Amino acid sequence: MTVFGAVSILNILDMESKSAEGVLTTIAGSMTGQGGYNMNFNPGEPLVILSPEHAAIMAQQGMSKDDVRAALHEKASLPLSTFAAEQVTAMLNKWHRPVVDGMVHVSAKPADIQLFVAGGMGPHSVFAPTFSSKTVTREISDK
Figure (cartoon, one colour):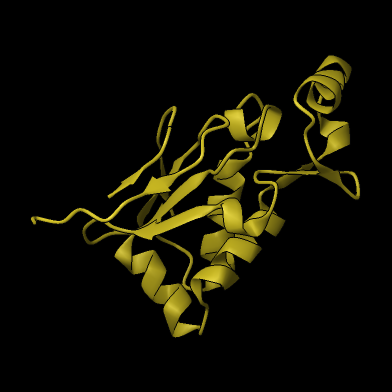
């Protein structure tokens, strides 16, 4: 069982993209909303649930989970200059937000993006922002 501290969920619909690049660009764009926990505050461990349809596109193009995490980490970012001055001050001084080459990423590192495949048919993936919490996974046994 995996438990995480999601603050909300966002349905991501992409029925047009047939490439991993297209799907990942759509998902990453949905992850970078200003004012979101993972963008403005502590990056935590954002959760992405890929639909089987979106996951199949990535698998058909030879992408591993780590490849998907790396692509999302790179694409789900905004220039620091897009944030208001008071936000930047809080991000850097209060939240100690990592900024790399002038970019604010949705996660501190690619491995922090929690990635699952779930759901039914259709091109709907999900983004669940988290707030400072760490994901915990434990095996459940009937013994």
